[in-house]
Image 1 (cartoon, rainbow, N blue to C red):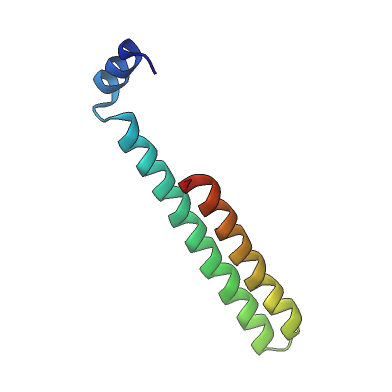
Image 2 (image 1 turned 90 degrees about the vertical axis):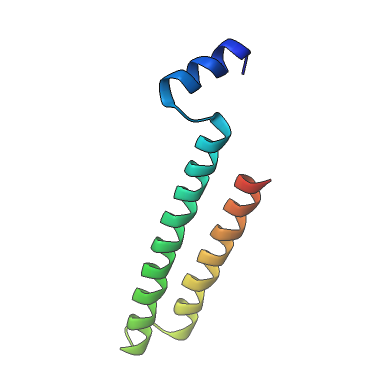
Length: 77
């Protein structure tokens, strides 16, 4: 960003672009962790009630782990 763009952003928002980026990345990870906890809990309940098998449950856990690792790599690198 140019100096004029930085000053305009700070004047209108009151925060720096770096802080805004940190807040947005933090929000993405918070939503991802909440969704992951919901998905894994739902899959666990299904597995405990024998509606899904162990392989399907592990598939949910592995998919969430892979999604978390990919987003961590892209957003924090």
